[in-house]
Each structure stands twice: as structure tokens, then as C-alpha cells.
Length: 162
Image (tube, rainbow, N blue to C red):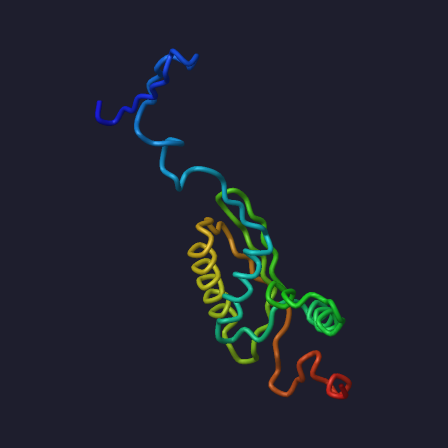
């Protein structure tokens, strides 16, 4: 009876009869289980993009065209500043799982298989730690190799004239 509370009302004033409230808690259950948390695809894409860029041997994310368009978009007043973080990453997020597609450019001379393995490990670790979503797959497409004597897109003579 220590866990039970009684709600007593005065019957002479027209109140309702006594009612018993079970338990002493409101809402019932663990507060952490009340409600839903949804995570947008873009959130997972940003986390994965940052985690992939942290891997040695990854020069850039996205195809050459995507990087060029992104550089132009950044220079336009009012253009998106967060786009480069998620460039080259596509996420499909469900209620408890996510799948990722990444497009990367690797440095010349690195083992592509090792870089891909390291990217998968880093991305899975970061996404699962930060979102509690299960990462079911990380597909990696290597779209280019950065040669030592190549200039990056957006670093040519025309971009230096600003």
C-alpha cells in the first residue's frame, strides 16, 4: 500500500468519489522509452562523410563533377555551407538500421582495399556510436585516384584570381 496513492475529494462539494491511482508514478514506464527519436538521412550522411575523410589515403569524397558543382555552390552567396561534409555520401535511414553508399577519391600509391576497409570500420563505428542505428552495409565506390602532380578541382588558376 506504500506504492499506492489515494485521490480524495470532498463529496459535500459535489466532487467525484475517491479514486485509487495505482503506483506512485506518472506516465508509466522508463522515461527513456517514452516517445520516438527520428534521425534524418542528412545527419547520418554528415557523420559518415566526416568519418570517411578522417581515414588516411582518402583524398576527397564524391565524383569530380560533384566536387566541382559543390565548389561553385559554396561561392554563391546564400549557398549551402554544409554540403561539402555530406558530398559523396548517400544514406537510407530506417527506424533501427541504415545503409550507406560512399564515393571516394584515394591518394595514389595507397592500397585501395585497405583504405576501403578502414573507411568502412571508421564509418560504421562513428554512425553506430552517435546514432545507435545498426549499419547494415557500407558500399564504397572509388571514383578516382589523386596523382601527386594533379591540381585539385577548384585550385586552378581561375580560382586563384579572386
